Image (tube, rainbow, N blue to C red; front, side, top):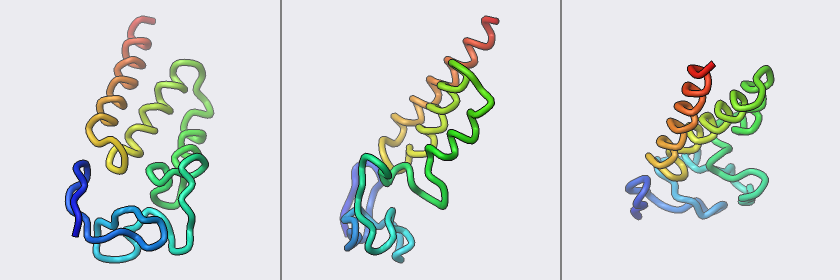
Length: 108
């Protein structure tokens, strides 16, 4: 058992990716067995679940433009990764982008 300052206790490190496993089984790892860590093209904090964050953002903002697209995309990005990267700092960043968009829309 180990301890992460951001996430708390973890049981062990994954033998494939060397990231902490927080649950009891192999499905709790960020990467499937045999996968390699790629912090540029597929960082673990954007690849939870069956869809990557960038693909979800692309779908959500495809009918938005300018600041609306940017603020929406950035808010989603920070909400997507908060538990796997920077904790409450990412939640505050998401709130900042949401507030920026609200202020922009209210000023029109």
